[in-house]
Image 1 (tube, helix red, strand yellow):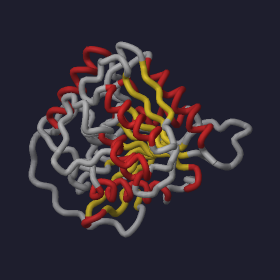
Image 2 (spheres, helix red, strand yellow):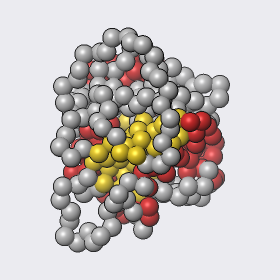
Image 3 (cartoon, rainbow, N blue to C red):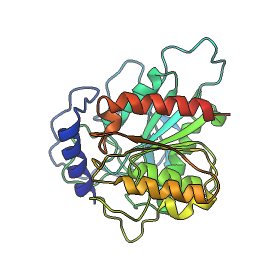
Length: 302
């Protein structure tokens, strides 16, 4: 599954966008000895910068416990400047990576949200399986395994969100979940289980059809099947022109139709050609996506 998703994502990014990582990617690591098991921390624990993570002054990285003795890893980006009328509340976005795993790509997105005045947290909610590893992969040892989209993966995301709530400066009442691809699908399944934080879903894997190159696992569940129990505000941003070969536009439309039928419609934004699956990093759509998401978030926080 990971090989299909990564290959497709990279092919789209190469054809349609120039994805700029936040620093120079290291050479892929040589295979080494298995990493020894690390005792999971009892709570949020500050750690040194993990291998592969962005090198930055005053960077913050944490470990926190996850189900089954596993560990979630968090990377925190703080805004440098606050609006004069923002008050003391600092809205926080928690960014969930897709099937390509925890990468500096997502730290780049977190930095862009931080530049807009948010406290931004991105983290490893599952360990991506190789081969091949992405050049900008971040080490998240002893992370939860990949379980697809179901209640087990929701529990792993819950661990990451619970850890984010403990990060100094986070206001739990000002929290937004931002998911991409598989991360968007699991964020919405989590909302369907009763969580009410606003959700921003980009290029989400949201419905069982139509399928693109991302083929569901037998254990996968889809947010479109649970629209009646999603009461959180939802923003869906998706390529609307047929250039997303991984999660076709019809998936977003099926989810939006289900939400409308349930009586609480999602806000939808469909991007014009040649926006593809990787549009959050694809100029000029990266700027359009961020502006739409930021405006929507500010309108939907309490």
